Amino acid sequence: MFYDEYTRKFKRSSEGGLQRSFVYFILEPFYKIIAVAISEEKAELEPILKKEGIALKNKEFDLDIKPLLKLVLGKFLGDLSCLVDCMALLPNAVKGTH
Image (cartoon, rainbow, N blue to C red; front, side, top):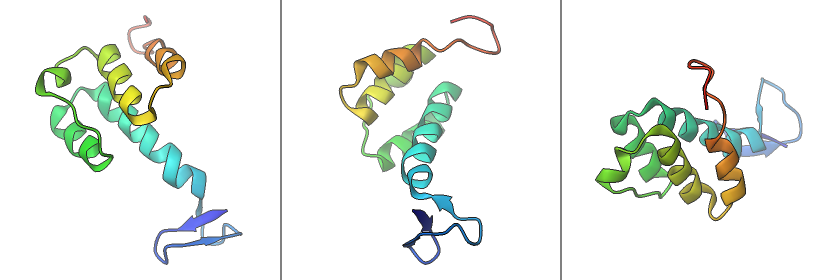
């Protein structure tokens, strides 16, 4: 199924370059939260989290990348600690470290 955000309807074909509904509703918000959490920009992260119904304390925004990502994904996905741990352990491509 594909989602047309202009008509706000689901369609069976991807005519006009429509995105799959899974990508639109699940993957894009997920990737956006990860990207902004990794960027360490509180001004960008706070409104996105608020839109998703996730509240963090001010001191939690000051955490390092991995604990912050683990906290945010834990609140976004619920109790999926094994998945969140795997995401937090992804290597840093820029630094070449974990």
